[in-house]
Length: 407
Image (cartoon, rainbow, N blue to C red; front, side):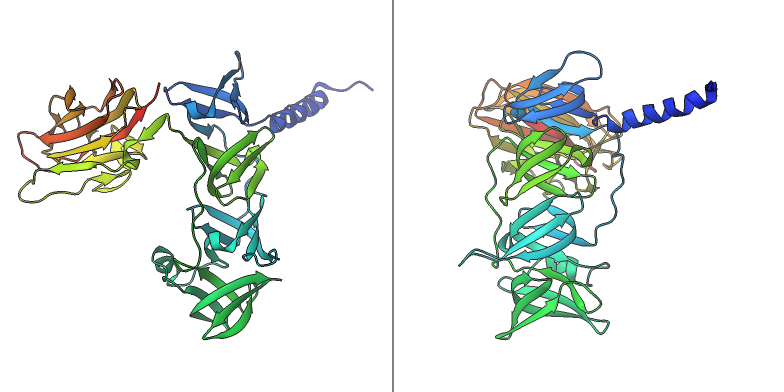
C-alpha cells in the first residue's frame, strides 16, 4: 500500500518534535569583558565551552565569566513543592521530602532533603535556618525568620486544627518525626499529616553558616525554585556542584535557569565597604543605597532594571580600597527614574585622588551614560554625585552595575 502525503507528514512532524525535545538547552554566556555567546554549554574544572548553533565553539576559564542564562523555558514544568528549606548560607531549597539521617557516633544531626528539582542532599542540621512544612506558613513565621531567637528554636505545630508556637531546642528529625526538648522534657511530633509540624525556625546560635568556598564560585537557580551557592564541578547532561554546606547537588541540565559567577576578576562596588564623605542637603544627609534605590527595589535607568549598583544623593563621595588589583571601572550613570522632576546633578569618578571623569549636569530623563574608565591599577576609586543648580530636589544619582575589572 502506498502512503499518502498526509500520512508521511505526521511521522515527520513527530520525529522533528522528538529531536527538538532531545536537544540540549541553549544558554546565553556573558563574559566579564561584555562579550556574549549563545549555544549549548559544557564545563569542567578547567573551563566552560560554548557551542553555538552555527560557528566554532569557544572556551573560557570560569573566572572570566559573569553569567550563564537560559534562553528558553524548561520543557517540563515543575510541580509545586510541599516543603521549603532555608539554609544559613542564604540558599533556598523547595523540597518534596525531608527526613533525618542517622549521624555518625558523636556527630551532629543530619537531614536528607529531596529537592523539587530532583537532587538528594545530605545536610548538617546546623546548616539549616528554617523549614516550612505546609502552606500557608504560620502567622509569625516570616517575622521570626527575619529575626530569630538567639539561643532557642521556634517550633510551629498544628494540633486538633489549632496552630501553636513553642520555644524549644530541636534535637533531630528521625523516621518522619521531629524530636525536641521543651522545658527540660523530650518530645516528638510528626513532620507531616493532619496533626503535625507546620514550620521550624532555628535560633541564631543553634547552628552556623558554612564557610564560603573560594572564588570562582557560582550561584545556581533552578526552574523548580532552588537557589544555592558553591563550587561548579561540571556541566553536560547534568549540572554538578558542591554546595558550601558540603553536599553535592546533581540535577538535569534542563532544570537550570541561571548560573551567576563570582570571580576575583570582577567585583561589584556594592559588595565593598566604602569610606563616606557627605555634605548635607537642607540639613539632611541622605543614606546611600546598595543594589536598590531610596525610592524602592532595584535600580531603574532608561527603561532598564539593574540588580547591582549604588544610588547616592548629592553631595556624596564614596571611596573604595582596590588594593591596586584592577584595570577598569565600568558603570551606567544617570538620574534614577523615580527621582524628582527638578533633579539636577553632576557625576564624578576619581582614581587615587585624580579626576578620571566629570559629567555635564544630568536631569531626570537625561539618557544614561555607560562609563569605561582605565584605572591603571590604582589603589582607591571614588564615585561622587555633586549638587547641580537646584541644590537637591530628588537627585537620585545612580551608578548602576558599578564594577571594577581585571583584564
